[in-house]
Amino acid sequence: MNWNKYPATDQDYDLYLYKWNYSTEEWEEISSSTDRQTGSEEPVETIAYVNMEDDGRYAIAVKKYSATENVDFTIFSQIGLSYHTLESSVTDPGSATDVVTVGAIARDSYESGPQEPFSSQGPTTDGRPKPDVAAPDSCNSYAYGYWQGTSQSSPYAAGALVLIQSRFPGYTNEDVKNYLYTECTQDLGDPGRDNIYGWGKVLLPDPQQITVTAPNGGENWTVGTTEDITWTSTGTSGDVQIEYSVDGGTNWSDIISSTADDGLYSWSIPDNTSENCLVKITDADGSPSDQSDAVFTISAAGILGDVNSDDLANSTDALIILSCDVGLDVSQYCPMDCGDVNSDGLVNSTDALIILSYDVGMEVSYPVGQPGCPTGVTPCAGCNP
Image 1 (cartoon, rainbow, N blue to C red):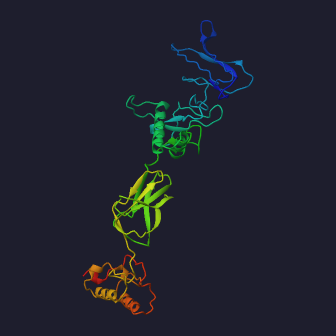
Image 2 (image 1 turned 45 degrees about the horizontal axis):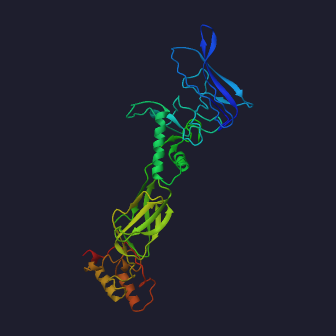
Image 3 (image 1 turned 45 degrees about the vertical axis):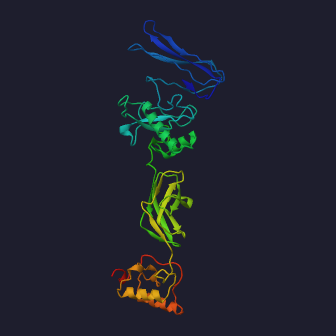
């Protein structure tokens, strides 16, 4: 028995257990709890009694020893009472503020409930919601086989707490509990926290995972251009670190130390050319992490109109383009993207004429001779002789 004067009280009440004597037709006291409450003791009285007979009538009495205030009593019994209520039936220590109190739902009913009929409900005697979460029982176990009880549900919830602590070693106990309540439960019953399922049934989220989708091997990204780094993720903290390597993963440099885990980051390609580049994305908490499946290339920007890579756009380049346009083998200069000076997606005699005009000093309306070449240009005939 307890009453609503936690954590300590000087309102002193005692608990008595009586049994009916059929011979004398009188109630006989068979046990009692008369602990003193003088101001520093909890408002609790406990009787432990085992009935050794097949039948019998029992009664409970509460007596005031020394008290001046009215209180609300809550009496708990392992055996059902003739008059009972499910509400406010959470016993100590489950009613304590810092305890994670676990209700039970049968495994076969775990999708939507109901709560097991023996599982206690809140609120506590001082009005706090309890239990905190619900977890399954009626499960198989190595030691006991299939069995019921919150004694099976509680280890399930405890296991979830241990996994949270392992995943976030810097968390305080309060952090771990809050993560369980907010990230590892699914609401049941009345919306929000309630006195039957608490924050909801324990349901661990999907395993944390990050998967880089681009660049993922084989791409050729040009210095000075902007390319999209993309990825997918589940169960992460909300922010990621993005790094790149130009030596196949031996050394890494930050692209950005922290950015939103939204699956997309637009990267301005640095002047750090290599054919052995990788991108790595890591959760802000340090795990999980993933990198490109294979290497990609960061290539020099190139000079528009320069197809022979001598850093000039002149008549030599125009001649190569004309040869390619008529089908002569110039494959050593292909794919020849820098030859598409008018950005029509083709390399042909029109581009050669523009380059020739630029070379003799005529004004042209295209940025011939400037850094930056298009990509994905359709090869001319001489690239596939």
